Amino acid sequence: MNFFETLRNALISDDINTKEALVNQCFSYCTKNITIKPLDFIPEIFTQPSYFSRCSIVDPKELPKRNHLDTNEGLAALVHAITHIEYSAIDLALDAVYRFYDMPKQFKLDWLEVALEEIRHYKMLNGILEELGFKYGDFDVHQGYFDISRQTDNSVIERMAVVPRYYEASGLDVNPQIMIKLDNKRKVPIVKKIIEALHIILDEEIGHVGKGDKWFKFLCDRDNLSHNIYFEILEKYELTTKHRPHINVEARKLAGFSCDEIKQLGAKECN
Picture 1: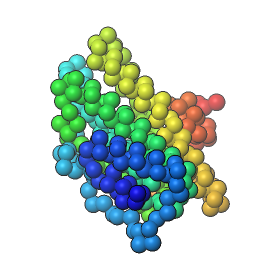
Picture 2: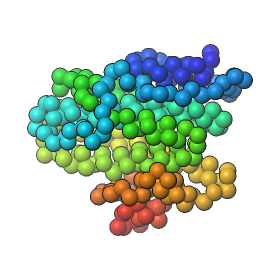
Picture 3: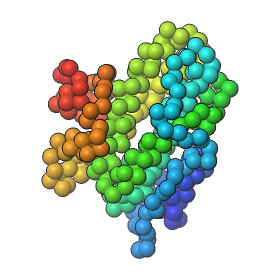
């Protein structure tokens, strides 16, 4: 099989079952073979996200606040937002494999594995959406994650710093806060199901951030760079001033962050 062509087809498809089948093909192939790029291979620069035809894309400022969690529509809006993050994460993982083709084989296997887990998260959440009477694409979305992938197209170390080690790590902070908001309604069966899904996602996202941490440090060590370049990269992308009211210290430590980093990100204590 043409590994990179199959990977590209997975990236551009907006059908989750097609994506899953193609990613499984790529993972199986990569497990058994060394993926060598064709001599004429140049990664495509995508101009729109794969969900372009399925979702109405708006500026993030235009997205409504998700407050009405006592209604089916309010819950669906919340679940849809998380579903969109998981869908976006599928393509981010695939793009890392496709674009940074000269990274080691284990890098490819790690991010293909992440893509398959994100597909499972997406399917789980979309199933809950359908129980609520909705589906992916019924609410407006933003393309912020697609934009950041394009901004980091030319630097694998910046991609690892900004995507898994910043944005996905931020999800470790936010996820428990959503569960707290839902906790007083956990006796409602569909809310209980949402909380259970969030627990699964939180546990597995620690591993995803951990993979980003591993490869970020691998690149630093390979190129004789201080791990503190992380904050220089965040500053370059204007991410150092973001307010973080809740830092999930234990989850970040499990994912590979040092206490010095966690405190620099805003945590008051880390032991």
